[in-house]
Image (cartoon, rainbow, N blue to C red; front, side, top):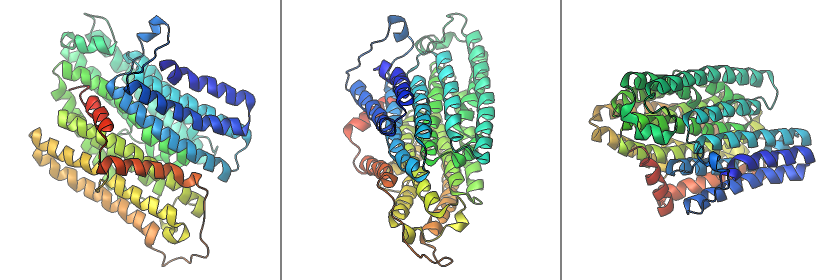
Length: 476
């Protein structure tokens, strides 16, 4: 199974480049996410075939939280792959361009899979850096001046962040000289032996380093530009999977703090970062002019909520796992739909888009329903997650923080909802001369996401609940 996750994308990418055939490229692009989904299901059911050399088995392993993140990544990958076919057709990409896009996407996914199953902190850091390099190529795929600037800004800021994370890892190794290991199992088992001073300094550096990749404030500057300039299916992958991948790295380090009984320090930093992310999102959401940047600031908001969740103890981490799934699927639907809007209106400016429901009713309703989902309204799972986080505030004795929490969420919903409804319903300023009918590839990925969200929100399947509980129990 591990071989499939790490090496199959590379082999399949080599086949795509060598054959350079449109049918092979598109078939491979749809096949790989299906294989990833199958691997996730087989691993969860207990059929875990590890066919690596013995020494490599030490460095890669499936665990309960990694399976959740892998499953989310695989489903988002499938939706993005379906939409990518529509993107290729609408942008009249050449066979060579499709092959390059597909191979780069495969390498990006393989790097993220490496982060999810790594058992060694330094090795995980290597894969996190690999996700930066591969995703930067996808951001620059359209080769525009603005996309070049966004890609370089992304590489520059994230490289600085990941360097700080590496400094944190070095500091952690200094504090853990008594057992001299960076394997997570050893770090958890001997957490009490780590020098508390070096451990806390290490966490601060790793928080800033991985926090940069996660896109939380105030180290979020790359995220709005990258999400805005990348192709829509790439934006969906960045928001729905990449941010999660870096977040998992931080969760694993938080586990060390908990085992060392230093989580009061880390929880304070996580709460501050989480609320600052909500504040920044609220401020910018009220004056946003670009709908793809609007979605990017929504990602910053939700990453901030995840930080708050894991800082609130066991009830909070369970709520964070639900929100992680809800955000990934909702934001994937929103970013893919933003690609439809861009295709129809040829602009990213909110003020130039009116009458979306009349122009393309299917896109308009998916846009609105996806907004309701990401906003945390019933019957979607984000509602459950935010309710549980509010409850976790009181369980943790921080009930007063629920007030600013919901005030900031209300401001963000006002800004984002106002933009979406103006784009969808307000048609007084324009005349709709003809409607648009896009191919089914333009809707299928979003429909898949919304069906899964409604299924989870209305009647949480026992299997999904079991995966969420297992993931939440990883660090508590």
